[in-house]
Image (cartoon, rainbow, N blue to C red; front, side, top):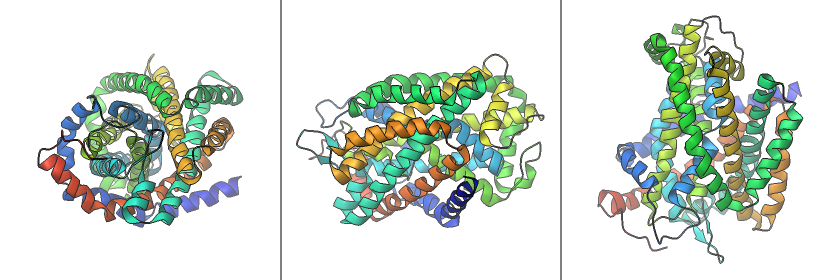
Length: 451
């Protein structure tokens, strides 16, 4: 098992080398500039996310699609993932994670636009879309679309089922001594009860849970930052300095190189917000929306909430807690997270437990839908039933799998999904710009698209 873990770690390090960093950040920057900084429209996008497009075609509301996408993205990447970046790359990784989110807003916008532009309406009225349809219908690259769908299925079983279930069982066992097997059974049963109803059931549950869990977690983190008030400014300065000069970290942090800070910050940023990954467009395609740009704007808010807000707050909590308590000892992200939150009296450990469990569970639900749509693209709707059974089984098995191997597998699948998706974004950037000009720059945002 250790040999296998080492091999997977080596593959992950190779996939997340300079080529991927350049390709990912390059796409973020390219789309940001070519789309005239769509980040400026974030407040318009937030308003649209809570506005219903009455009469528009789709399976779920724009908010329902956003909530499902957020459910899949707001997970262990926001808590343990950020801590892992700090533990492995130093506090400077927080800045790289945050910057990935800021510029990733443009990429998430492009993904949402293409999802609506190339979606397909099935005979039963349901909508199917995502990068595989953009690759096939927009670029005529069927083989690359098939590869993306395969990577999505693999990623859903790793990122969606295994990683999240493992995180839930680990924190429950370490905090309350709950046997991982019993935790696995509970996760499997609860997952089955929701996913059997399809996208509408998943969107309904996520629409209720996501706002509650996000607000609860942010309020708790703000309380912790209040306790660590005297260390906030030193933490901010350390994060910025360490991003470009890792030796400036000190204070109990692990030193490293700039590439390590960038590598882990960007990797965890992508794992958290999935901008460039190509997963969120799959559910964005099911949204009831008048035109591609409206949903593109709504989709972009997912990256804003997930990384620009929640990941940044989590990173600040962890770095300030380590500065406030230099005795904190850690060797990995999970250990650092637990140690940092445990230093906060009364609210620390319960906040971590509730936040991690709810975040991780909704991520399991969201990724199940992504995997289902990939299976339906490859084999048809009938095979999605078999996939659900496999997904539930993997969620159970994830509670007893080695965590290091699971995280590295997740990173590998992230990279493999990102490559064909980024290809579609770059080659179809002209389409994205053309629609953006018509609907957004020319003030036709209320116009209804001809499906």
